[in-house]
Length: 507
Image (tube, rainbow, N blue to C red; front, side, top):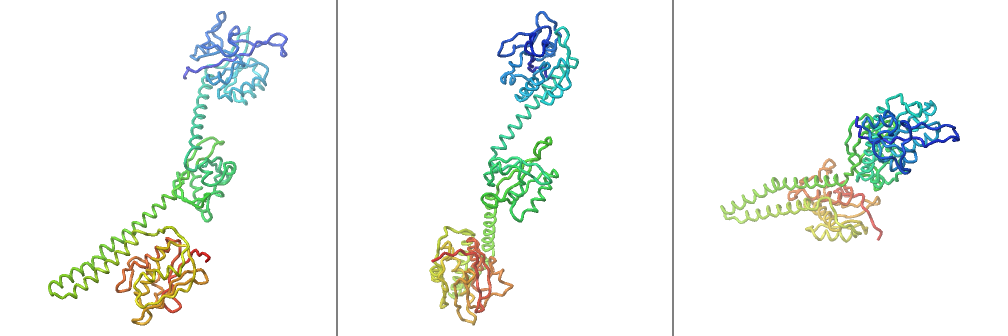
């Protein structure tokens, strides 16, 4: 045992004849040890000069403890904070003994009670009040005899006190980390197989929109699990309750809407009064959005690489062949064919760069006149003798430049595939139907049902001069605005491209 501990031996104040109980308290050794009124006497007790050296205080000092002697009034909070154990001599005033034990325990100092009279009722009360040990004693001629091993009892009390202080210090550090953690954390216990909050840190209340008083005592699944995720949450609870270490991505309802989190559980092994664990939620919403953007960028780069390695390689080979033929034959028609191939390569690169640079993003949206932007886009493309009918005066919320880009590609698609009859050019209609669906329709040959999803794939084309990226750009621009895009048949048997989820403004 570590005997460097400081022990305060507390004796009863003098009781004189005529006191209410008619008794005088025994003293340690053979007489009182005088000390200052405001504190104990420092230094080990060597025993009074005229008394024996085997009293309880002396035995503790001989065992290596740093013993100080004082009265209950000397045991101030400052003094209790400086000692490792209190040994208190008590008499028949049980209430006063219990009050002293409670005050000492509240100060964080263990107390060993030495009772000369050995009363069973008093023993029960002081132990219930928190005394570390209760030792009956005897008094003969003013000298105290403790039947039990007082040194061992103080050893146990000192060790228990130090362990308690270490636990309290660790708990205080944990509470500080808990309260100041930047990520939402909730302390929980399982009640009926369901996690119930027992505490929450500030980051949790800020993120999920609850104050601490509201969230404590609430079932966590009722507070933060979004609709449709209940069964998933129950399965997760079962894993946590079974003691599994869990680190999974979850979606949770926050004060600002549903967000993505990395959930981790920290199990705690405590007594029955402690929490079962802590749930930590690390917000990864922004990280996942960055990952999605990176994934889409990589897909566009793959498209770019595909065109460079395949779609451009073939026309480039044709250009080289035509130039070589022109050299050999002197026929300039071969050069005209080479220039045509170069023009197609330029078209492919222009549209592919649009895919790679802009992607599924839009700039500042604003109210845009659909008739105005429809006619503006029509003037940007070579439509030959095709006709445009704008059958709406709607104003939509959109990025004007990207909406123009969307319409341009639809017009090019309609003109490229021609009208219903061979050699005829189509008529294109831009309008809004009664369901709030914005559409661009033509009277061409239409798109077979089985091909309507495929037409939006990169590189898909049935036209002789098409690049296969125009409708991919259309879908990309629509998704960037949050619109759903689809294709159907028009009233005239041609293709009808439909956009739903468009926000309209009153004129």
